[in-house]
Image 1: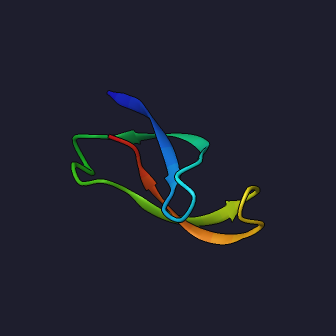
Image 2 (image 1 turned 60 degrees about the vertical axis):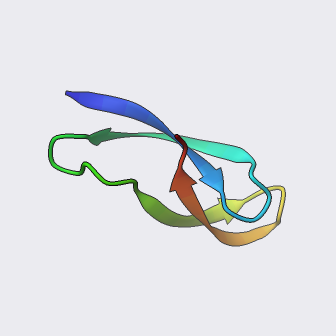
Length: 49
């Protein structure tokens, strides 16, 4: 029941990371603070539509 999701940087809109989540336990969109290589700093990455 785990689905693959793509994380997108909120500042430069670059798709940097791929992860998985259980949509039954976490139906809302995930938000993680990760390093963006294009921005060269830690930014908030949100789940892509």
